[in-house]
Length: 381
Image (tube, rainbow, N blue to C red; front, top):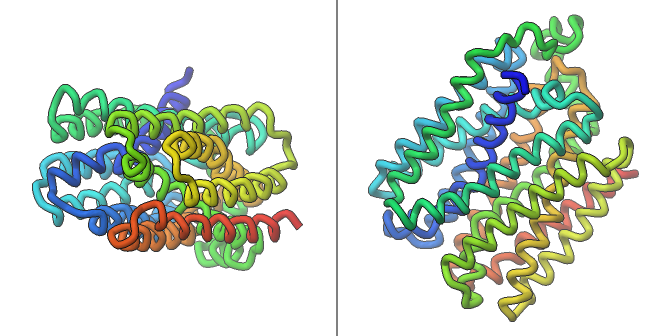
Protein backbone atom coordinates (compact mmCIF):
# COMPACT_ATOMS: atom_id res chain seq x y z
CA UNK A 1 0.00 0.00 0.00
CA UNK A 2 1.37 3.41 -0.96
CA UNK A 3 1.61 6.32 1.45
CA UNK A 4 -1.07 8.07 -0.62
CA UNK A 5 -3.48 5.15 -0.25
CA UNK A 6 -2.73 4.98 3.48
CA UNK A 7 -3.45 8.70 3.80
CA UNK A 8 -6.73 8.35 1.93
CA UNK A 9 -7.84 5.37 4.02
CA UNK A 10 -6.89 7.10 7.27
CA UNK A 11 -8.85 10.18 6.22
CA UNK A 12 -11.87 8.03 5.41
CA UNK A 13 -11.64 6.22 8.76
CA UNK A 14 -11.36 9.56 10.59
CA UNK A 15 -14.37 11.08 8.83
CA UNK A 16 -16.35 7.90 9.47
CA UNK A 17 -15.51 8.26 13.13
CA UNK A 18 -16.56 11.91 12.99
CA UNK A 19 -20.04 11.17 11.67
CA UNK A 20 -20.63 8.40 14.25
CA UNK A 21 -19.09 10.24 17.18
CA UNK A 22 -22.13 12.06 18.59
CA UNK A 23 -24.33 8.98 18.39
CA UNK A 24 -21.64 6.89 20.10
CA UNK A 25 -21.08 9.20 23.08
CA UNK A 26 -24.46 10.96 23.18
CA UNK A 27 -25.73 9.33 26.35
CA UNK A 28 -22.63 9.82 28.56
CA UNK A 29 -22.07 13.27 27.05
CA UNK A 30 -25.64 14.32 27.85
CA UNK A 31 -25.16 13.13 31.43
CA UNK A 32 -21.84 14.96 31.74
CA UNK A 33 -23.27 18.21 30.37
CA UNK A 34 -26.68 17.70 32.04
CA UNK A 35 -28.64 18.43 28.84
CA UNK A 36 -31.97 17.13 27.46
CA UNK A 37 -32.96 15.75 24.03
CA UNK A 38 -33.68 19.22 22.65
CA UNK A 39 -30.12 20.33 23.26
CA UNK A 40 -28.78 17.04 21.94
CA UNK A 41 -30.75 17.72 18.77
CA UNK A 42 -29.18 21.18 18.68
CA UNK A 43 -25.71 19.65 18.75
CA UNK A 44 -26.54 17.24 15.93
CA UNK A 45 -28.03 20.09 13.92
CA UNK A 46 -24.97 22.26 14.57
CA UNK A 47 -22.86 19.60 12.89
CA UNK A 48 -24.94 19.93 9.72
CA UNK A 49 -25.32 23.71 9.93
CA UNK A 50 -21.59 24.45 9.99
CA UNK A 51 -21.04 22.06 7.13
CA UNK A 52 -22.94 24.29 4.69
CA UNK A 53 -20.61 27.32 4.50
CA UNK A 54 -17.53 25.21 5.20
CA UNK A 55 -18.13 22.94 2.22
CA UNK A 56 -18.59 25.87 -0.14
CA UNK A 57 -15.43 27.62 1.06
CA UNK A 58 -13.42 24.39 1.13
CA UNK A 59 -14.52 23.61 -2.43
CA UNK A 60 -13.15 26.88 -3.78
CA UNK A 61 -9.99 26.68 -1.69
CA UNK A 62 -9.31 23.07 -2.71
CA UNK A 63 -9.62 23.83 -6.43
CA UNK A 64 -7.48 26.97 -5.95
CA UNK A 65 -4.59 25.88 -3.70
CA UNK A 66 -4.67 22.11 -3.98
CA UNK A 67 -5.83 19.16 -1.92
CA UNK A 68 -2.84 18.60 0.40
CA UNK A 69 -2.99 21.80 2.53
CA UNK A 70 -6.77 21.58 2.81
CA UNK A 71 -6.62 17.94 3.93
CA UNK A 72 -4.00 18.73 6.58
CA UNK A 73 -5.90 21.77 7.86
CA UNK A 74 -9.17 19.85 8.10
CA UNK A 75 -7.54 17.04 10.07
CA UNK A 76 -6.06 19.52 12.53
CA UNK A 77 -9.45 21.20 12.99
CA UNK A 78 -11.03 17.83 13.80
CA UNK A 79 -8.27 17.07 16.28
CA UNK A 80 -8.69 20.41 18.05
CA UNK A 81 -12.46 19.93 18.24
CA UNK A 82 -12.13 16.59 20.04
CA UNK A 83 -9.68 18.06 22.52
CA UNK A 84 -12.13 20.92 23.24
CA UNK A 85 -15.08 18.52 23.56
CA UNK A 86 -13.07 16.40 25.99
CA UNK A 87 -12.46 19.43 28.21
CA UNK A 88 -16.03 20.80 28.03
CA UNK A 89 -18.07 20.81 31.23
CA UNK A 90 -21.06 22.86 30.03
CA UNK A 91 -23.21 23.02 26.91
CA UNK A 92 -21.73 26.17 25.32
CA UNK A 93 -18.12 24.97 24.86
CA UNK A 94 -19.40 21.54 23.82
CA UNK A 95 -21.53 23.18 21.14
CA UNK A 96 -18.49 25.15 20.00
CA UNK A 97 -16.52 21.90 19.83
CA UNK A 98 -19.21 20.33 17.63
CA UNK A 99 -19.06 23.42 15.40
CA UNK A 100 -15.29 23.01 15.06
CA UNK A 101 -15.72 19.27 14.46
CA UNK A 102 -18.12 20.01 11.62
CA UNK A 103 -15.71 22.51 10.06
CA UNK A 104 -12.85 20.03 10.16
CA UNK A 105 -14.97 17.10 9.01
CA UNK A 106 -16.44 19.04 6.09
CA UNK A 107 -13.00 20.21 5.00
CA UNK A 108 -11.57 16.68 5.00
CA UNK A 109 -14.64 15.25 3.24
CA UNK A 110 -14.35 17.81 0.46
CA UNK A 111 -10.86 16.51 -0.36
CA UNK A 112 -11.07 12.84 0.54
CA UNK A 113 -14.01 11.97 -1.74
CA UNK A 114 -12.34 13.05 -5.02
CA UNK A 115 -9.01 11.56 -3.88
CA UNK A 116 -10.68 8.15 -3.70
CA UNK A 117 -10.87 8.12 -7.51
CA UNK A 118 -7.05 8.08 -7.56
CA UNK A 119 -6.47 5.88 -4.53
CA UNK A 120 -8.81 3.17 -5.87
CA UNK A 121 -8.53 3.24 -9.69
CA UNK A 122 -11.52 1.94 -11.62
CA UNK A 123 -15.10 2.94 -12.30
CA UNK A 124 -16.50 5.77 -10.18
CA UNK A 125 -19.04 3.45 -8.57
CA UNK A 126 -16.30 1.02 -7.54
CA UNK A 127 -13.99 3.74 -6.22
CA UNK A 128 -16.64 5.59 -4.24
CA UNK A 129 -18.29 2.53 -2.70
CA UNK A 130 -14.90 1.07 -1.74
CA UNK A 131 -13.82 4.40 -0.29
CA UNK A 132 -17.06 4.69 1.62
CA UNK A 133 -16.54 1.15 2.91
CA UNK A 134 -13.53 2.49 4.80
CA UNK A 135 -15.63 5.47 5.90
CA UNK A 136 -18.24 3.01 7.15
CA UNK A 137 -15.52 0.98 8.89
CA UNK A 138 -14.58 4.07 10.87
CA UNK A 139 -18.24 4.66 11.74
CA UNK A 140 -18.68 0.99 12.70
CA UNK A 141 -15.65 0.79 14.96
CA UNK A 142 -16.38 4.09 16.73
CA UNK A 143 -19.38 3.00 18.87
CA UNK A 144 -17.67 -0.32 19.65
CA UNK A 145 -14.45 1.39 20.68
CA UNK A 146 -16.34 4.08 22.59
CA UNK A 147 -18.40 1.50 24.50
CA UNK A 148 -15.27 -0.51 25.35
CA UNK A 149 -13.22 2.49 26.42
CA UNK A 150 -16.05 4.03 28.44
CA UNK A 151 -16.10 0.91 30.60
CA UNK A 152 -12.41 1.49 31.37
CA UNK A 153 -11.93 5.25 31.51
CA UNK A 154 -13.94 8.46 31.67
CA UNK A 155 -15.37 10.23 28.59
CA UNK A 156 -12.65 12.89 28.62
CA UNK A 157 -9.89 10.35 28.01
CA UNK A 158 -11.92 8.54 25.36
CA UNK A 159 -12.24 11.74 23.34
CA UNK A 160 -8.52 12.46 23.69
CA UNK A 161 -7.71 9.00 22.33
CA UNK A 162 -9.92 9.73 19.34
CA UNK A 163 -8.13 13.05 18.82
CA UNK A 164 -4.82 11.20 18.69
CA UNK A 165 -6.18 8.91 15.98
CA UNK A 166 -7.53 11.76 13.83
CA UNK A 167 -4.27 13.71 13.78
CA UNK A 168 -2.58 10.78 11.99
CA UNK A 169 -4.28 11.87 8.75
CA UNK A 170 -2.45 15.20 8.84
CA UNK A 171 0.85 13.49 9.64
CA UNK A 172 0.54 11.06 6.72
CA UNK A 173 -0.72 13.71 4.28
CA UNK A 174 2.32 15.87 4.98
CA UNK A 175 4.54 13.17 3.51
CA UNK A 176 2.65 12.67 0.21
CA UNK A 177 3.82 14.33 -3.02
CA UNK A 178 0.44 15.33 -4.45
CA UNK A 179 2.01 16.89 -7.56
CA UNK A 180 2.62 13.43 -9.03
CA UNK A 181 -0.97 12.19 -8.65
CA UNK A 182 -2.67 14.09 -11.50
CA UNK A 183 -5.60 15.18 -9.33
CA UNK A 184 -6.08 18.63 -10.86
CA UNK A 185 -8.10 17.66 -13.96
CA UNK A 186 -7.73 19.05 -17.48
CA UNK A 187 -5.50 22.15 -17.90
CA UNK A 188 -8.36 24.03 -19.56
CA UNK A 189 -10.80 23.38 -16.72
CA UNK A 190 -8.16 24.02 -14.06
CA UNK A 191 -7.35 27.39 -15.63
CA UNK A 192 -10.99 28.48 -15.80
CA UNK A 193 -11.98 31.35 -13.47
CA UNK A 194 -13.81 30.40 -10.29
CA UNK A 195 -16.91 32.25 -11.47
CA UNK A 196 -17.03 30.23 -14.70
CA UNK A 197 -16.59 27.00 -12.76
CA UNK A 198 -19.41 27.67 -10.31
CA UNK A 199 -21.59 28.89 -13.18
CA UNK A 200 -21.11 25.54 -14.91
CA UNK A 201 -22.18 23.74 -11.77
CA UNK A 202 -25.22 25.93 -11.05
CA UNK A 203 -26.51 25.51 -14.58
CA UNK A 204 -26.26 21.72 -14.59
CA UNK A 205 -29.36 19.64 -13.79
CA UNK A 206 -27.31 16.64 -12.58
CA UNK A 207 -25.64 18.88 -10.02
CA UNK A 208 -28.99 19.96 -8.61
CA UNK A 209 -30.55 16.52 -8.63
CA UNK A 210 -27.57 15.03 -6.79
CA UNK A 211 -27.66 17.91 -4.29
CA UNK A 212 -31.36 17.36 -3.64
CA UNK A 213 -30.79 13.64 -3.23
CA UNK A 214 -28.28 14.39 -0.47
CA UNK A 215 -30.67 16.97 1.01
CA UNK A 216 -33.20 14.21 1.63
CA UNK A 217 -30.77 11.38 2.35
CA UNK A 218 -28.40 13.06 4.84
CA UNK A 219 -31.06 13.67 7.54
CA UNK A 220 -32.04 10.00 7.50
CA UNK A 221 -28.49 8.87 8.17
CA UNK A 222 -27.97 11.55 10.82
CA UNK A 223 -31.25 10.67 12.51
CA UNK A 224 -30.61 6.94 12.76
CA UNK A 225 -27.01 7.45 13.84
CA UNK A 226 -27.94 9.90 16.59
CA UNK A 227 -31.21 8.45 17.92
CA UNK A 228 -30.93 4.69 17.39
CA UNK A 229 -29.72 4.12 20.94
CA UNK A 230 -32.52 6.25 22.42
CA UNK A 231 -35.11 4.52 20.22
CA UNK A 232 -33.90 1.07 21.27
CA UNK A 233 -33.63 2.12 24.90
CA UNK A 234 -37.28 3.14 24.82
CA UNK A 235 -38.06 -0.39 23.61
CA UNK A 236 -36.53 -1.81 26.77
CA UNK A 237 -33.00 -2.62 25.62
CA UNK A 238 -30.07 -1.87 27.91
CA UNK A 239 -27.59 0.88 27.08
CA UNK A 240 -24.97 -1.74 26.22
CA UNK A 241 -27.34 -3.67 23.94
CA UNK A 242 -28.43 -0.47 22.22
CA UNK A 243 -24.81 0.51 21.59
CA UNK A 244 -24.11 -2.96 20.23
CA UNK A 245 -27.02 -2.68 17.79
CA UNK A 246 -25.78 0.74 16.72
CA UNK A 247 -22.54 -1.01 15.83
CA UNK A 248 -24.62 -3.57 13.95
CA UNK A 249 -26.19 -0.71 12.03
CA UNK A 250 -22.76 0.58 11.01
CA UNK A 251 -21.52 -2.94 10.19
CA UNK A 252 -24.42 -3.50 7.80
CA UNK A 253 -23.86 0.00 6.42
CA UNK A 254 -20.21 -0.81 5.78
CA UNK A 255 -20.76 -4.29 4.36
CA UNK A 256 -23.39 -3.13 1.87
CA UNK A 257 -20.95 -0.56 0.48
CA UNK A 258 -18.28 -3.21 -0.02
CA UNK A 259 -20.84 -5.43 -1.75
CA UNK A 260 -21.96 -2.55 -3.98
CA UNK A 261 -18.35 -1.78 -4.97
CA UNK A 262 -17.89 -5.26 -6.41
CA UNK A 263 -21.39 -6.04 -7.66
CA UNK A 264 -23.00 -2.79 -8.86
CA UNK A 265 -22.38 -2.60 -12.63
CA UNK A 266 -21.40 0.65 -14.29
CA UNK A 267 -24.38 2.55 -15.67
CA UNK A 268 -26.82 1.22 -13.07
CA UNK A 269 -26.22 3.95 -10.49
CA UNK A 270 -29.44 5.88 -11.06
CA UNK A 271 -31.64 2.79 -10.95
CA UNK A 272 -29.88 1.62 -7.79
CA UNK A 273 -30.50 4.94 -6.04
CA UNK A 274 -34.20 4.78 -6.93
CA UNK A 275 -34.61 1.19 -5.72
CA UNK A 276 -32.86 1.89 -2.42
CA UNK A 277 -34.95 5.03 -1.90
CA UNK A 278 -38.18 3.07 -2.19
CA UNK A 279 -36.93 0.59 0.42
CA UNK A 280 -36.05 3.50 2.73
CA UNK A 281 -39.70 4.56 2.77
CA UNK A 282 -40.72 1.06 3.85
CA UNK A 283 -38.06 0.91 6.56
CA UNK A 284 -39.10 4.17 8.20
CA UNK A 285 -42.76 3.14 8.06
CA UNK A 286 -41.93 -0.02 9.99
CA UNK A 287 -39.70 1.84 12.45
CA UNK A 288 -42.50 4.28 13.27
CA UNK A 289 -45.13 1.55 13.60
CA UNK A 290 -43.10 -1.16 15.37
CA UNK A 291 -44.03 -2.11 18.92
CA UNK A 292 -41.77 -5.04 19.77
CA UNK A 293 -38.07 -4.80 20.62
CA UNK A 294 -37.05 -7.56 18.19
CA UNK A 295 -38.55 -5.84 15.15
CA UNK A 296 -37.17 -2.47 16.26
CA UNK A 297 -33.67 -3.93 16.63
CA UNK A 298 -33.90 -5.66 13.25
CA UNK A 299 -34.98 -2.47 11.49
CA UNK A 300 -31.98 -0.55 12.81
CA UNK A 301 -29.62 -3.10 11.25
CA UNK A 302 -31.62 -3.35 8.01
CA UNK A 303 -31.55 0.43 7.72
CA UNK A 304 -27.75 0.34 7.78
CA UNK A 305 -27.67 -2.17 4.90
CA UNK A 306 -30.01 -0.05 2.78
CA UNK A 307 -28.55 3.36 3.63
CA UNK A 308 -24.96 2.27 2.96
CA UNK A 309 -24.66 2.44 -0.85
CA UNK A 310 -26.87 5.51 -1.37
CA UNK A 311 -24.37 8.28 -0.65
CA UNK A 312 -21.36 6.80 -2.52
CA UNK A 313 -23.54 6.06 -5.53
CA UNK A 314 -24.79 9.67 -5.56
CA UNK A 315 -21.17 10.79 -5.33
CA UNK A 316 -20.20 8.45 -8.21
CA UNK A 317 -22.87 10.05 -10.41
CA UNK A 318 -21.67 13.55 -9.49
CA UNK A 319 -17.91 13.04 -9.85
CA UNK A 320 -18.32 11.02 -13.03
CA UNK A 321 -20.26 13.89 -14.55
CA UNK A 322 -17.76 16.74 -13.99
CA UNK A 323 -14.11 17.39 -14.80
CA UNK A 324 -11.68 16.79 -11.91
CA UNK A 325 -10.79 20.49 -11.81
CA UNK A 326 -14.37 21.18 -10.66
CA UNK A 327 -14.59 18.37 -8.12
CA UNK A 328 -13.86 20.55 -5.09
CA UNK A 329 -16.61 23.01 -5.91
CA UNK A 330 -19.00 20.24 -6.99
CA UNK A 331 -18.60 18.41 -3.69
CA UNK A 332 -18.86 21.72 -1.83
CA UNK A 333 -22.14 22.62 -3.50
CA UNK A 334 -23.47 19.08 -3.01
CA UNK A 335 -22.88 19.19 0.73
CA UNK A 336 -24.00 22.79 1.08
CA UNK A 337 -27.47 21.82 -0.14
CA UNK A 338 -27.39 18.48 1.68
CA UNK A 339 -26.37 20.24 4.87
CA UNK A 340 -29.64 22.17 4.91
CA UNK A 341 -31.51 18.91 5.32
CA UNK A 342 -28.93 17.61 7.78
CA UNK A 343 -29.49 20.71 9.89
CA UNK A 344 -33.27 21.04 9.85
CA UNK A 345 -34.53 17.50 10.44
CA UNK A 346 -32.49 16.49 13.52
CA UNK A 347 -33.41 19.80 15.18
CA UNK A 348 -37.09 19.17 14.53
CA UNK A 349 -36.87 15.58 15.71
CA UNK A 350 -35.09 16.61 18.91
CA UNK A 351 -37.78 19.15 19.74
CA UNK A 352 -40.61 16.79 18.80
CA UNK A 353 -39.06 13.88 20.70
CA UNK A 354 -39.01 15.99 23.84
CA UNK A 355 -42.82 16.16 23.70
CA UNK A 356 -43.99 13.01 21.89
CA UNK A 357 -41.05 10.60 21.94
CA UNK A 358 -38.32 9.67 19.46
CA UNK A 359 -40.37 7.04 17.66
CA UNK A 360 -43.07 9.51 16.66
CA UNK A 361 -40.36 11.97 15.65
CA UNK A 362 -39.16 9.45 13.07
CA UNK A 363 -42.23 10.34 10.98
CA UNK A 364 -40.16 13.27 9.72
CA UNK A 365 -37.45 10.87 8.57
CA UNK A 366 -40.12 8.88 6.73
CA UNK A 367 -41.19 12.08 4.94
CA UNK A 368 -37.55 12.67 4.00
CA UNK A 369 -37.44 9.18 2.46
CA UNK A 370 -40.46 10.04 0.32
CA UNK A 371 -38.67 13.17 -0.91
CA UNK A 372 -35.58 11.10 -1.68
CA UNK A 373 -37.63 8.72 -3.78
CA UNK A 374 -39.23 11.53 -5.76
CA UNK A 375 -35.85 13.07 -6.66
CA UNK A 376 -34.37 9.66 -7.46
CA UNK A 377 -37.22 9.10 -9.89
CA UNK A 378 -36.45 12.40 -11.62
CA UNK A 379 -32.77 11.44 -11.87
CA UNK A 380 -33.62 8.02 -13.29
CA UNK A 381 -35.84 9.39 -16.06
